Image (cartoon, rainbow, N blue to C red; front, side, top):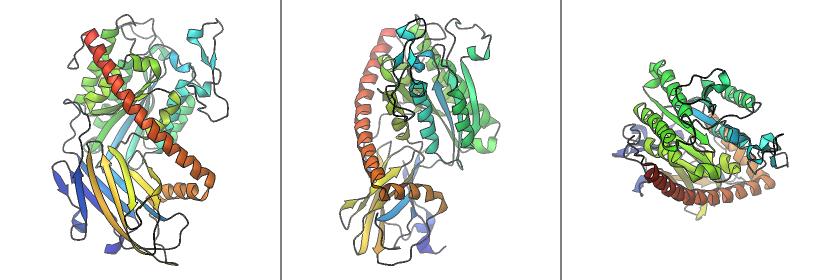
Length: 455
């Protein structure tokens, strides 16, 4: 590989810049400090956070030929994580049979409340089970897995829902009474995750919301697997994606709200000790009415708390959470003053887009922003020339190139993409507002129940 063909990389840490030695002489870069995001003092400590912005394609100074979409530019950005283990924790309590209010399965029919045979509207399921809240959880899990790289990431599935007849200390008599289950152990074969999710969709949600059991089970799964694989453990970041549509009602029953929350907070302390970061998703009105447990599990471990008012927005919301702490990447042609179109950023930090070019040399600016408010910038020169021979696109980014190219060339897909981006921007604002309200409700709930986060 010639020097001009090397990917451009910039790595920086909270304590200062860490430049890649092979590019030290030719790199032009700047870092601007932004505002720090909210994190708790007791958040999981993973050492000094180092970040990178890498341009995988095209090389600096490349000749770009005629293109209807613009110049394809792609790379990676975010926190430096060599390996990642994720436990996806799904709420399978009875309330998740309720309709999500959206067409989750895309069949053109939106499921509605269908009373049970006893006529109870309080236990009504979705007329289309594939449009239920649980189906929305499964769709979100699928969307997350699509955003991850199996070469560096392993994923597992855990479910939780306790038998309301059992109280703390009572042993379950059947497998379904077990308050938390491993549906799929950690694997980098993501087809196994899909198979496990398909099996789960055949089960009928039941039971009450035993959050502490689900959290504890996932923490043990991540810790035990890491212990059995010391080589991976040394450089592995562990995190949980936790979905729920309710408040903890077990192990002590709904009448002991404070004790149930304390059980969750004790599990959170174990997550902190094991270095597990938790991203929590509160789905719907009930979860957001008393959000203390889900707010604190994210805040105390340095994860993100994501309030989702409508279950149908869950897949979009989960895809917007970066496992490498990346908030956004912006690509702009400074020569033409035009931004990239069809720009996509995956949860694992892979980004790509098309940027329009003018004849001659174009200066392209790429800016990455991380969750702690840090920004890093890269400048790239591209030369537009008719009929120029294109360099080969690296194999690891061909998937995002093909997806973007299909969206660009298909006008219907392009309109859909632009609509998705508008919806995403609106959802982000809604989540920010709801997050503030949820934190206020959590503070009120904490005061009412006399719960300290140190518990």
